[in-house]
Image 1 (cartoon, protein in one colour):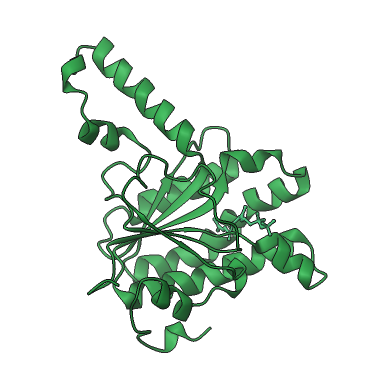
Image 2 (cartoon, rainbow, N blue to C red):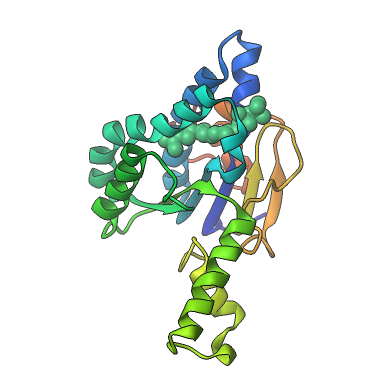
Length: 232
Ligand code: FPP
């Protein structure tokens, strides 16, 4: 139980596909419902005073899904940020992306880059989307960057510490998550924030992500629900 809300909560938003199937809908319709619920979880996180919310939106393993589902997941951020960016600006929300954006379709990469650059001076909650993210890939990417810095003479081998390594991860200067929540019933970490989760509390919910409410988030972090945002 936390006295106040944890600074950084990260969520593995699992169960969208099964949510769709249960309703005789497509997996993509499940992802759309997940993206709508994500909006509510962002609202609830603000009300709860969470400072950083990381959302696992597309894993580096998700490329192996059927191409129509991958295409749908690549299109979702375009739809989402085209609609939500003005509101995020108004509400002082900062957007970050953790992951390798290089292989993404141009339009998706551009929309994500625009969301990050437009909101970089916002000082409210940081919503960090893990997109084309994998924990092992994150560590390899950081190691390669460090090697380059040593090669270029910017740092020496002895400058490589845990703190510096952490800075070079996709999550950069963000604090490590205090809690990782996984919805959808499975009790695995699935290559999410492997380095950053070393000290994180793990919380598993059987609820499919599109049904995971603000109240459930409040319960996970041991807080009272705070207001109307939390219903639904
Ligand atoms: C895992 O559920 C979920 C995903 C692979 C995608 C999660 C994405 C969102 C909730 C929306 C992202 C939106 C934006 C704007 C970035 P699953 O499909 O593996 O569920 P299953 O275990 O039931 O198959």
